[in-house]
Length: 126
Image (tube, rainbow, N blue to C red):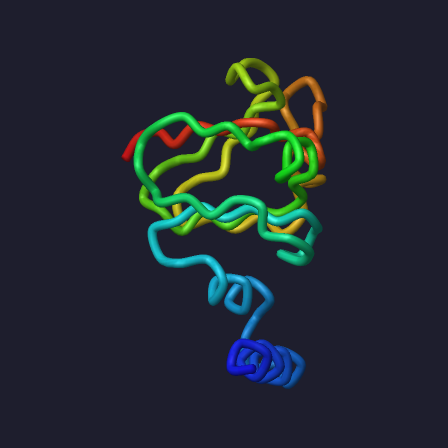
């Protein structure tokens, strides 16, 4: 019940224009974490919430693999999102303290779009 009240309260504050969608999503992504959502605008299921510690991370098959559409990087690391489980090309960068509400905006130099294509990621330079 308390969680429902908090979410409804957050929605009311957001609709009133007091906070931005990124600030609202940050309430569901702890400080020094990287979080990824199923849908653009930090909506749908939050499939990833990992501490900002250097390393490799796979996004499991039925839990977000090829379904990620928005990212908040609240860590001090740079995240490199990969389209394959083996951390290969193509990849996209999400820098420390960067929010990307729609991965359609992330493209490689070859024009590969990150939306619904991320299968793994690395946290680097932290």
